[in-house]
Amino acid sequence: TDTPAGPLTAHGLTVTYDDFTALDGVGIEIVPGRITAVVGPNGAGKSTLFHCLAGTVRPDAGRVEFAGRDITRLAAHARTRLGIARTFQQLAVFPSLTVEENLRVGAEQGRVRDLTAVDRTLRLLGLDGPVRHHPAADLPTGTLRRVELGRALAGAPHVLLLDEPAAGLDTAEVAALSRVLRALAAEGTALLVVEHDLDLVAHLADTVHVLSAGRIIASGPPERVLDTAAHAGGGDV
Ligand code: ADP
Ligand code: MG
Image 1 (spheres, rainbow, N blue to C red):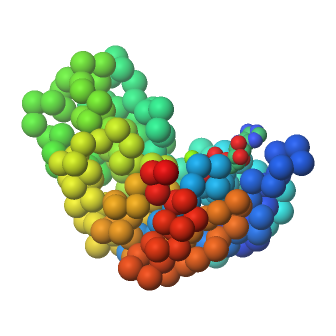
Image 2: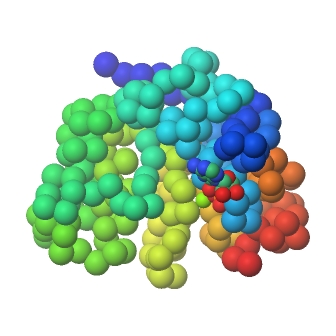
């Protein structure tokens, strides 16, 4: 059975930790076929927003909708099942499983459970050579990050949420990642990239939102918005 595609939208998201307001009425729309970025300085609330969309933080106010359905109260694993996939910075790969086996686990948790998506994903990420049979434990970090992305993609998600995907990657790996994310968008996937690295966002995103102290202070195409981000301290500063 398939699940409908559609935008992932949030309205008025507010999250408070004790009496600190981490998100203050944030709205965002993540649209099929487009790469949406959120930038901002450390502590701006980027990861909190990410968690509200992924289902790992419940907002105190506001709502999250996917394809017209209110999913604000839906658990993270159920969102994955609907086709909202995410990656983990701490990598959610199983070290004793091979690359291919890790992707099969991802496929089991995702929207479609047929294994054609596993093969397609292995090819897309350049993991279809002999490395597909290697245990993940033996692989260098850059390859592991691809396996982690592959785990998320193997369930053929409608939406892919990425928190700082460029962290720890070298220039060539960032370029390769950008190509993969562009290809996914061209196929109709809705992507959210939460990033510190303004260079990546400048070249990749269709729309950028600048988050500062829990509020979106500027939105638009990267060439218009990234000056604001630099002034808000949104880069590696
Ligand atoms: P970013 O990802 O932009 O660096 P975060 O969303 O991680 O920002 O954090 C936003 C603010 O909320 C920070 O001041 C952070 O210290 C605070 N914060 C985040 N998570 C928690 C938590 N579980 N408990 C208390 N404060 C938190
Ligand atoms: Mg963060």
